[in-house]
Image (cartoon, rainbow, N blue to C red; front, top):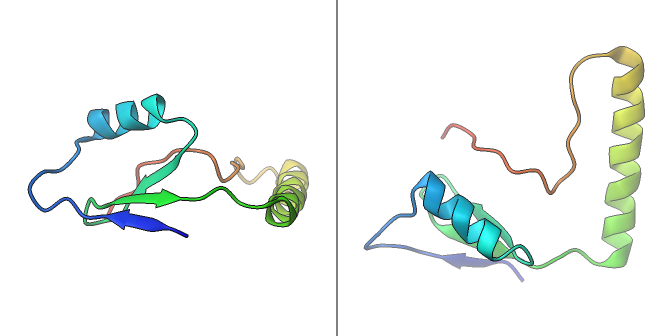
Length: 81
């Protein structure tokens, strides 16, 4: 079950959020466009296996076509709102 934590009175800046992630490496943490913290459970074995297969196929396709780079779902990125 995904948990969304609303922060009405304060916001984590990028450095604080990064440090929170470093201090809690066992948790899957994200922030949404409003700055709310989202805590997600790990995937199960079947989902993890499916994700690995999709990532492998995407990497192989991209390696042949040289169109960019491929990341797995654990990569951290800051996207514009």
